[in-house]
Length: 443
Image (cartoon, rainbow, N blue to C red; front, side, top):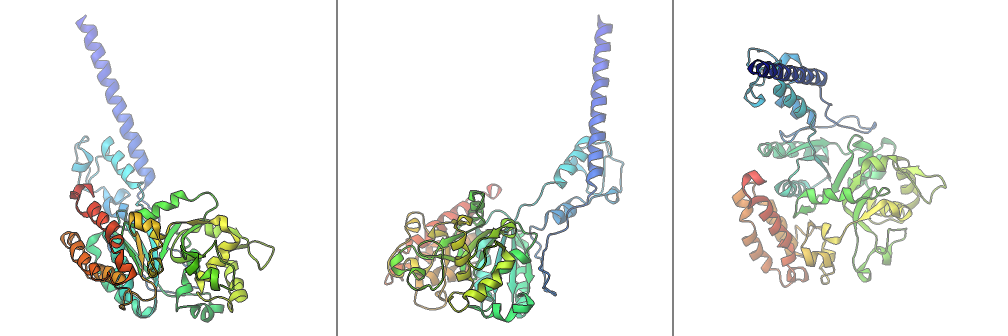
């Protein structure tokens, strides 16, 4: 009986070893098939771009770059094979391969194919907008969880300043950035550049320039994030099959609305939309054929812009925002409308509070248009801006932001916006608590 038992045990041991060998060979073959080659970093620039500065902070990086840096691929990395076959992967040096080690090969293969998810944020900066833009980017970094990819379109004289400041933040390892020149189609460049404010219409061409970017959040320079970018980015999942972009209404109260009282062109909905915060599925934008009032034929995004400008250039006041209103007037099914708390402007409180969602949950994104960050007309907006501008990235500094800020806001109660100052810090307080009052391992 013992003889049969020994034979059974021996057979099981041989079978187990054979199975392990088969798994190890399969994993090694998968590793060799992966080869160590990653996708090249994505960067699409329209054909009319002749050149432009480009910089990258040592932050999140592209999926290919991160994978190659952490786990150099190919046979060149295997400098030493004298390792016990069954050492756990995490005990192996990066240049050592246990060729018959199932765990080593399997872990390397699985880590290589994991993409690095990033949120893409675009901004256009011209003239005196460097400080505003840097403050906006800082607010995005402070609260966000997922790594960020910044696409910064700026006049050439601003590039060195952007590089110097953003490279000094590289220790954060939470963002990458790309710098681009201000660029319009050559045959109409002068006309586009002078539309409304200098460079503002650049946003219309982002789907054509950033050809390999699927989704993008565009914001004006005078935007401040009071909650993680992750939260507005998640609205992309709420788009139905026809929606390509998301914006907030221009006004909540029609009696003080601009479009419904003064516009000499079509506009979206009852009061129009504001393009200072615009979330886009650019893949859909590039594919869609848009209805329009210039021809019976539907046109693609790039083919529609210049004819639209030629038809309405004498009738529009707010430049590219008016053109977007015209486009979505004819294609209302393509727009997702989010609430005013995602694009809170002085218009929402200057004549009394008219953004109910902000009253209930606080302001999510602050939009200081009309230059209110730099004058005394709306001191509540200015107080938020100065607090974030002067804030460092140190955890303790961010945690201690609220008390002095609330004291400053209490000095603004003589204004309509100041009377409801608590909505300015309601969501901000939660963002700080969620991001910085938890143990480091939970962040």
